[in-house]
Image (cartoon, rainbow, N blue to C red):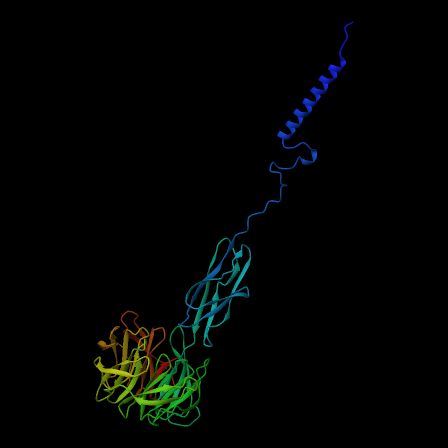
Length: 431
C-alpha cells in the first residue's frame, strides 16, 4: 500500500480556502460592501436624505393710479398691510408677492388731501397663475369756484357785495350749490387764494381795502375775514406768486400794481409798494403758470394788456410792455393751465378775446374772438384745472357762463349759464 502524505494535503487545502475567502472579499468590495447592515448605503458613502420640492411660484399685485395732481401722494395697502406710497400717476406694484390661490385686497390707507379722494376698482380677488396688473385707483379732487358779486348782502347781512362759493362737478364742470361765504365785503371785485390754500384775499374796490379770510380746506368756506393790511387805493385785481411769498394788488384808482409780502403763518400782507410801470386804469391781473410773467388788463381809455417780467426771487415786475390787441374796455384776464392761451373779457366789447401765448417771450399774439356766446357785460374769466372748461362772469346779466374749450385750438363753444344767485358778478377763481 502506497503511503499518503496527509500533512502536505492539509497545507494545500488551507491555501485553497484562504484563496476562496480573499476572492469572495474582493467580489463583495466590488459590489459596494460586505456587511448586511450596509446594503442601502450609496456608492458615495453618505446616507440618502429627503428630496426638497421646488418653491411654489409667486406673483405681484399692481395696477394704475390716475387723478393725482402735482405734489400729491396716495398710500395703498394690500390685505391691510405693506403700505405703498404712490406719488405720481401711472403704474404701481406692491413689493410683496403672493402664491396662487391666495386672496388679495387693495385699499386706500391715506387719501392725498382733505378734498381729494381715491376709489379702488378691481381691487380684490384670488391670485391665479400670473401677475395682477388691473387694479385701478382713481383719484378725484373736489374743486370749488369763488364768484365775486359786486353788489348784494353778505352771509352776515352786512356790507355791500358778496362772494359766492360753488361746487364744481368733476365730470361736467357745472357749478351748483352756490351760496354766500365770508363777510364784511364792500364793493368786492376780485379774489385770490394763497399758495398753500389757507387764505383768500378779496379786493374791496368800493371800500378801498383787501379782506383776508381763512379757507376751510375741506369745504372751501371763507371765515374770520379781516383787513389784510394792503393799504391800496381802489383795489381791483389780485394774484399770489406760485411760491406764496408775494401778492400783487392792482390799484384801479392810482393806476399802479402793488407788490406785498405775505406772512406765511397768518397770511397778512405787508410792505406793499408799487412795482412795474405803464399801467392805465388797470383792473385784472394774472400770472403765467411758470410764474415768469404777469399780465395786467388796462380798462378804458387804454384798452390794453400790459405784460411784465417777474423776478422770481424778489417778486418785482419789470420790462412792462403792451401786448396783444382787440381789447375793448377789458376787465379780466386768465391763462389756460398749459399757458398756451390767454382769455381777456371785454366788458364793452361784449366778447372774450383769445390770444396765443409765445412760449419763450410770453407775448400775446393772434388775438381773435374766442367764440364765446350769450355774454352780457363780461367781466371775469377763469379756466378749470383740467383745461376743459372756461367760465365768464356777466356783470350786466348777473350770470356765469360755462364754455367748452377746444383742446387743440383753445376756442370756446357751447356756452351755457351755470350756477345761480349772482349779483353783478365780477371776479371768478377756481380753488
